[in-house]
Image (cartoon, rainbow, N blue to C red):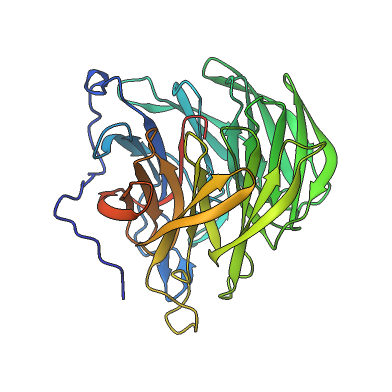
Length: 390
């Protein structure tokens, strides 16, 4: 049974939606970028290519108004494979990056093969649009832009590397790769610290977290690693710069999986706390003030209905943050096969993605409870989401 959300006020997004004039975006605008995979569906717990796939898209949303409003939607390659952090938005909201881990096989449209495309999106254009398509490594997954907007890193899931790009304005230039020495290391997601001098890279394939040192445009592997859980996936650094959090996926067998808390203030980053959350941790994000953490466990909603730990809904869970301590505040049911989550600047609204619903749930938060109030429909299944600097 599928979770049903009232659609009385649902925002319906047509594929060829016309962009709103930029003058219609008021000073309170906050850009959220959702990437959407049109190539796959979930049938009885199995991901497959449908008979008539639609184009992958990107949806630009103003999260600074209530309720959030769609600004534009257009074609751009994406993929649900990998953490829902294949999107990165520059701190000044001038441009965004979207990576595509997989694409349809040109020789067999019923199958997928690794992609290598990284799209650069001009968010200031009217309407917003893709202005460049670059090549990263094989299977580009998590992306990150440093706080000053001069450097981008892309985790190449299928080749065990991280691509480095320098940035001038909205132009990206390849500047080498970090090679972890194992094509199966599975680099998944990347997060910069607020000072831009360190980046954490989760390695889904060998269950490690690498620590990169950043000096200007020079990125090096410190060779230091952290080991927290099975299949570390999404990673996010607090805006306060004192901690990071890492979600673990496990074997997708129904086991409750943890979020690891990383202390960034010591001699070197290390995991100092672990909090059990739910089945198969997918998305996570700090609020802008760093006082709350939102986490999305898939909660068995991506399993076959016959599985003993299947549920007909995902979950959005919010924790309060006090130093390295996470305390559960609230949770709410959301759609099936959920992916990423994003906060509004004021911390009162969250967007939570559901691949099965082809929608983002609008969720209100009052500091004590969560409530699904509406949804934004998109073309394809929403697979990744980010806001500026997050």
